[in-house]
Image 1: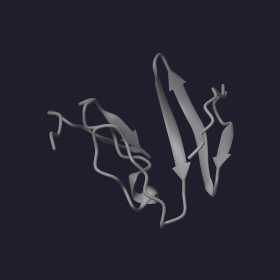
Image 2: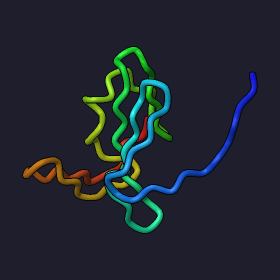
Image 3: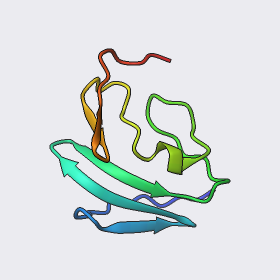
Image 4: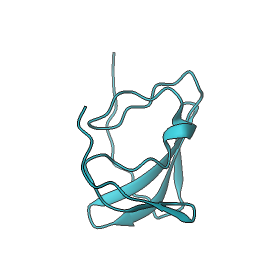
Amino acid sequence: MSTTKFHIELAAGQSITVGDTIVTLQHKSGQRARLLVQAPTDTTVTHPGRSPVSNPSAHECAPSPELGKEHTHGKHPVRRSTPTVS
């Protein structure tokens, strides 16, 4: 299998399409970026340190377990006092 590797620079709000999947850079702060991944339901989406997600729409706003910080989803803040270990 032949592969190609390249870098893409995006501004917040810009998207790229990979096959049938759209990846949008929603927010960038320091060395962290929030990406919105819109993929067909039969596409497996993986996240570092987590199990693969088969339904990306249910996962798109979930906070990263290693952060342990307040995360705002809509208007309701959600707090994690301790990181989740799997």
